Image 1 (spheres, rainbow over the protein chains, first blue to last red):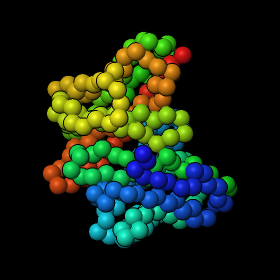
Image 2: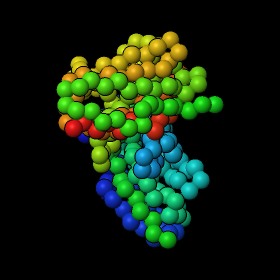
Image 3: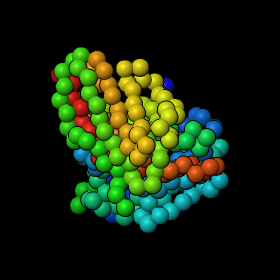
Length: 113
Length: 115
């Protein structure tokens, strides 16, 4: 059973475009939603994270939008660059579990120059 | 500050063999989590160690076992290897604060191939 569902599986955009990756969850006990970026041969690196008490969080060119009632959250990458080409994972966590992360299946993003 | 390190980088084993993977947590972190990432999939939680005790386990059989040492480094052991165990094994360290979700820092992983 996939606790966090992520779409699309792959995404191709032109440089400067705004790719959007979506995730949905069922467990209302989740209270922490991070996004990770992974390059080939590397481990995932934390990009940005949000808690359900806010609807949006922005860090640099990365923005998370969070819709608690719909149990959905999404990642927007502004002014995308070829260096953003990577696999992106959304995840969710219940704070009481000391950090077990439930990951989505990932989105492979390609940004063409 | 030293990040999370894992060894070895790559490993090739045959079915039925046993393997030990190692992880050194980031300086100051007392919690280590292990994840299995199959090709084209998201990481799946195996188990977590907090202050040398197992603290939660995912849906993995008992042939997956682990240890955490007093310096908070950790080992993942897999017995009776199966072909489906071929994956990238990731270690993540963190320092959980009471009442707060903890940020996890991942190592580069160990790529295990079972033939």
